[in-house]
Length: 137
Length: 400
Image (cartoon, rainbow over all chains, first blue to last red; front, side, top):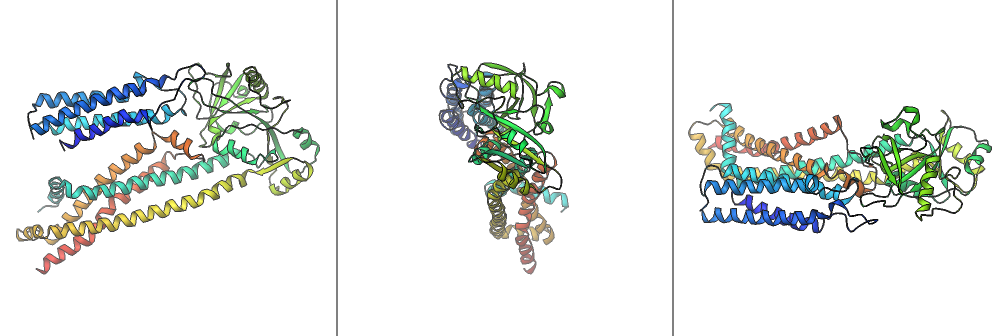
């Protein structure tokens, strides 16, 4: 379980990077001279995804080398949870989406990023619970 | 061994052999996930068609000859379109002396383009304020007095159109006040904007000033795109339809029931296929779970023998096997229901836009029932699959 959770987060991190560039794309270009408010979502997701992958890789190293202290597990777990909150925040309070319910960023990108963020938070919390007792595996 | 401790032992067994039991819980999860998704889709299509049938409010719809598909596109698929009668259809109808007509009201269609970065094209439907009977029963929220919702400058919007905080929506650089919002239909009408003929003219002129040209010589105050007709009680709709055809040329008479009926017919095959697939999935899950429990029980035969030697009865071993199956089914069912929920509800708008058919997710009791039925099947399928193995193993142990 300890090893699986960071691997899951690495996959989710990859999804955060690739998703908004491909199938979770935002509204494209400028229309009638106006810029869609969702245009910065891919950049924010890219940064969040890269940080998540780095944190999860660090956690994996701690688990495999057996050198992780309790504090190290707590810090990496909290960092993952924060990235989860950021993933939820990108389409809501950080960047936002177009107002119309039928724009792609509103009806596909937004719910997908919220679900991805929720999954990151859940894996972070489960990781904190399973790592709370033993110092190393 | 007490009854309570059997459950605890079953739970401990699962905890200690997560890998072994994971596949069975995953099977139940896939079953409940797929089953709930399938049932929600089936019920949503049926509810959408039912709501559209109620929403039409008319028995007959008249459109210019050859525009039946376009009318279907507006009403069912939500594709913004415009078309107009070349003749004065209302005068012709009034002079034709057709028996059986109770009410008739004309409509004028117009479409919008993308006005800003976040707008999508919508269908405008210009109504006759005095004669319209199609939208009043479907008003969900009124922002003005009941009598004023079709006044000049006011618009009534479908359920999918967002109403800004200031209550004003811009089309072709003109602002219109939202007077009411309609109930959801799951059809193309959810993306429509309704307004009176004078407001339609204001909008039409704004569109012309922006360089949009719909049809030469078109006057939103007089031109007609469609006529909705209700017939008197006891009157044969087909007879009225024939009378209209024989009196007026260049008109396509559509029986609204027939239009929805043909869509329904097309979807019936799909719905039947979905039911068959759900049935196959249930049977397949039962067979796989039965085989899986059989293998598992055979693998652990020695453990059960050992338990018998320390005084565990064959009934308690049976209960242990069934309890494990029950716990796995509960875990699998909960995960399946949660997965189905997050796969369909957050993406409702996207699914609705993709399917292009009336699609209305059920709510209230209907939805609770779907969850209960799916959850129940998920919970009982595990113990049912394990029942044969449980009986066989306890019998086998007795023989020895």
